[in-house]
Image (tube, rainbow, N blue to C red; front, side, top):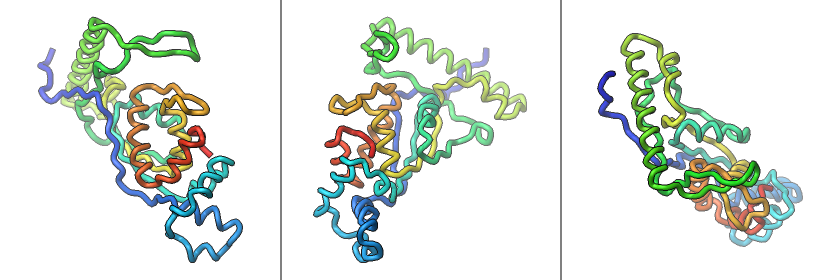
Length: 242
């Protein structure tokens, strides 16, 4: 077998960056008030939203959702491909992912950290996850590293032989890292967070996979900084998307 490529890297973290946005609590207010004030709302776009916490709470509580759509956030996410496959179950965002057809994929692979629970217990619909033993962690680490190294070596052999990238990538596992832009509005993000973050105080508790929850929590922190009143109302109303 060929020698292991020196550049093969293993990571356990996912990263999220907010690359651009047009999102503020005041966006919710002018969108809501147009129903009763019409063109008069044009005079109040961008005004201080702090005095209107009650209106935002009312909209969230009674699930008047459309005012929460008049904003936009674009995140740059770096994560294993299997996380992106879960993302794309949410048909409420725009996605653009790097392509293994058009660029050589980097040898960066996911390896669970020692904090990641390994053992699934319970029955369908009621699973919980508990920490694994030292032996199980060693097994997971060894198997993932072996498979990923061998797969990337096979990928490189095919590329070096002139095989097209879109064919050679077929041997790569879902643990390989990819990157994508995700663009959504606050209403869509709340829907995503309601399903991909586990919080005990939620009206409808969710039990997401650990890796996508790590991404979702980073997105939530960034959004909360942009729209603190809307985020506050979302949490107060049991994390139910309007």
